[in-house]
Length: 413
Figure 1 (cartoon, rainbow, N blue to C red):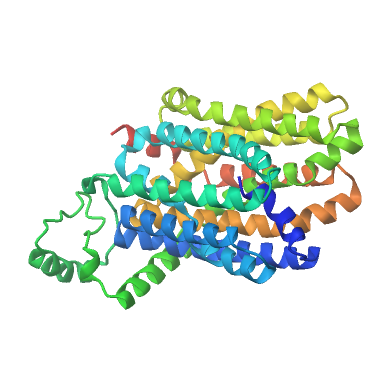
Figure 2: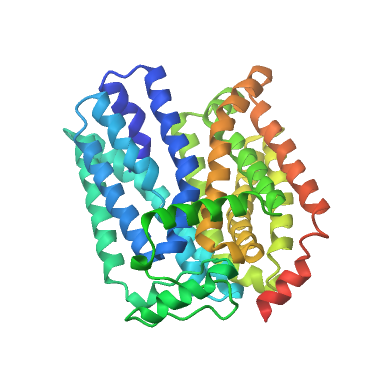
């Protein structure tokens, strides 16, 4: 509801385009660094506690946004949201803790479908409310209320669902065991010896900061760099496809903004529906997320390439159809692959680092898109097709390193 209205609201507060761009960039930078930290922190203190904290602070930020009568209050309101609005990432980590590995793509697909429905309905509701007197403030208040309701739902969750899977060096296992034995609550070590779950009171703030730093740097310097690079390439490729979509449709096919909006909504709806196909597809591929990701990346490449050279409108619609399915499936598969390959690092840390990688793409895409548009309106998607092809090549070269058959066997077991 809020995101499509932000630029219009900043303009109404008297902000110049440069000022609006600086505030938007600062928000992106906050998201870039905070996603890994908050994700890793959720591994330490528990998903339920981290999710509740993020939701409540985000509600505070959106409430302050609704009170923004000048650009300074607006900029201040974006700080807590930029740091703590990671409820989707922590929810994914929560789900990955609660479901078996072989069911994870199916559950993640349904979760992404629910998120996509929010992106479909939200702009419509926000657009309607903003036409009312003080519409932006009403929308911000409604957004704050929704966050508070979500916090209440999280609070009502059974505490037994608050599971984490953290990594603790073997030299510290005895220390944690001693701390846990003194606690009134019984906490069990994980079966695969990935770590011990400490209580929040057993850790000082400094110990949490050190642990978060070690976990994030452990992932950053792990052998998973190629999977994160694949994620970056695919994310940039898809964002380049959408970066000048409305302008390209107007210049190439003389489409009105309303018709372009219908086409974007059509793709978003298909993406939501595609999430429900992850279960049957996983069984068809024998739970081999690597192969599913490779094939979805190939489909993404051909869809973007087809759009970039499409002479007719029906070809654009066809490419949008295939791209909606391939990106929805690929987004779920790469998260599942990261969690399977890096399970020892903790799901919150892995998902947080993955979100940081995507944030890097959001910073790079405006620059790449602007340069490519100097060449042609079709320049951004053509560059995106090249990057998608590079990700396919990288995945093929890494096939021996990430043995897909072994991963699928591990999931079936």
